[in-house]
Length: 301
Ligand SMILES: C[S@@+](CC[C@H](N)C(=O)[O-])C[C@H]1O[C@@H](n2cnc3c(N)ncnc32)[C@H](O)[C@@H]1O
Image (cartoon, rainbow, N blue to C red; front, side):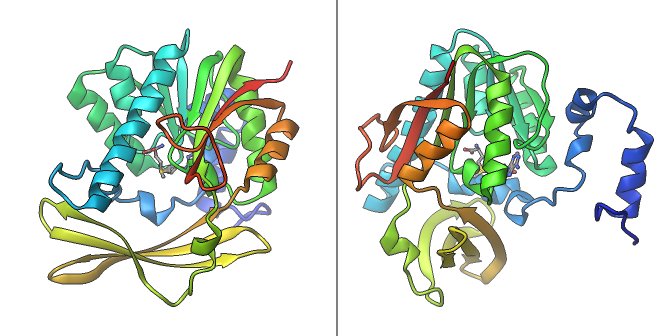
């Protein structure tokens, strides 16, 4: 297949050229502006992704109890933030609707945006099963155009770390700021980079978690990862194994670490004020040993 001057496959570029006279916001709403963005393989299988956030049982191991508490706390945190907003809420990188659907179920008017068609299909299925109205739009969080403004904009669960360059982050923050209503809140959570983890042997496999899969039985997720200190990108390989199917799925993906002091500069450059930074979802204040940076920001006037 040939490519045009922008490197777009000929098939796709001609489809875009056909509609190039439409206004940009119309194209964004229709998802056409995402044509050049390949879907991350991690998100082509929403059932596998959802396993990572299944609630481990009460009786499970200490690790499972900690994980369950973190998942439940993250759901409660974003629900509280959505209830606190005085108008419409936008969740960018909403994935399979893990947070979007319960928030809509609580009566909040919420939009979900994601790059992945498969994740959005799963989210639409969950919203329809729950009987709640959610508008899902396929778009890139770096450059989306939606009608109106939002009282709160969320980017949850490390999704911001999928943006691998300062330019990507700058574009995303500009789009968020453009869509934020006066006195609106921009809320996101990302890891607090753990130097011991980043310095791990890239050839060593580490167990991330074990979960029960309805068909495959106990599924183990291992990872290897190599951290590039120049780009701050962690190149990760995930290995999903079942008792009878070792490494039945191997997935590569990449996350760019954002260090705490760098985040202040990025937000400042993007026109945001960091109002509060928590170190975990139960709203403990952020400190050097905190696992996460859970941030609530407002737009600078
Ligand atoms: C870790 S999942 C988080 C999903 C959801 N926020 C949650 O907490 O369950 C990351 C999501 O980000 C989406 N994503 C990655 N890059 C994106 C981009 N540039 N624009 C919009 N969504 C993106 C992926 O498709 C995926 O659904």
